[in-house]
Length: 396
Ligand SMILES: *Cc1c(COP(=O)(O)O)cnc(C)c1O
Image 1: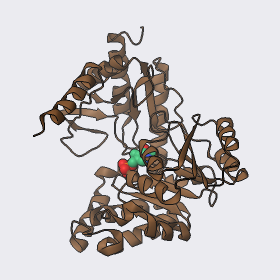
Image 2: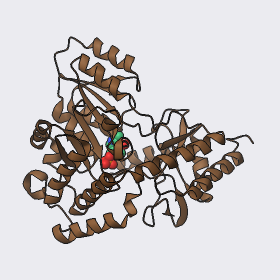
Image 3: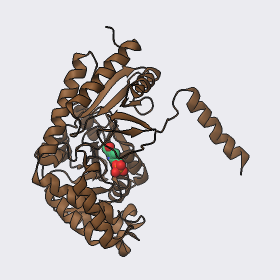
Image 4: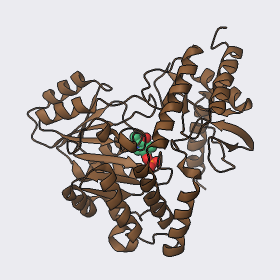
């Protein structure tokens, strides 16, 4: 063991601990539902991206089991060798229909979709205009591309246009990239305006719909459907690891885009495909969403109910427009203490501090799900109020 190397890591861990930035990673001891067992304790779960409760659905589990029986447990290779199972091919077709695009390419997750797609599409000499609050996987993809990254102010069209104009004379490809729904704040990108500005300046548009999938639009078709922008966005990235309740990612767009990425995207070429179980489950999830929009409606109903209740108790839900409900606390340590107090009282909601969110805007992020009962939401809100009063965050 290299002692200097171990010491370097040790010193950094000590620093994180001293500054209250080290992570406490909890362990899930049961199936993930609206309530579940975490570190041995049964709690109401306000932390999952499992918006539609798909993780625990019997029919989806059955589809995954059937896929294992037919195709085995692993995919055995990358897509371009022998990892391209019939289930993945069918899933790409079905998802393309659901998303109302020409074609879809499945990735192993949203992160590999971003980090494999962006560097394949833009290069040294090109320009990326990126919302300053974009997801880390977008930022990594941008960095890998070697294109010049120009951040614009969060959801600010004037700022975007100003930046594009500043580089008007540059000859390279210009690409505007934004999250659809921002995961820390729960606000929605002004996609129609972004598309309009990009078009006017000859720029390409890319949106990451990770938190819009299964949440926004008709039957949860996502942000492009929500804004009626079909055919207007050049590259759509998404994940099957959130509302879809499985694991996987995708890129949606034209046949040309998909064929190009099959040949050029390094995470397609050098990392194995999703497992048969994942692909089989995804096929079932698309069927469920296509058949009925009940789950999506229930999700929004629960989100509205919880948000209204928290606001009435005097909490600040920031600029959330979606089921992602931040509760702004301000101080990082206080947010951590509140999350710990809530856990003791039977509610799990994650606190988020710097550097994940800006200093002074530490929060507890509440994630709503279509399978939460009113009783669970009432209990969670009441425990929030009780804990916040005890910690002096709310004044009675
Ligand atoms: C969660 C998330 C991802 C990553 O998706 P995975 O499938 O978990 O890799 C990518 N982009 C955004 C905006 C996300 O919120």
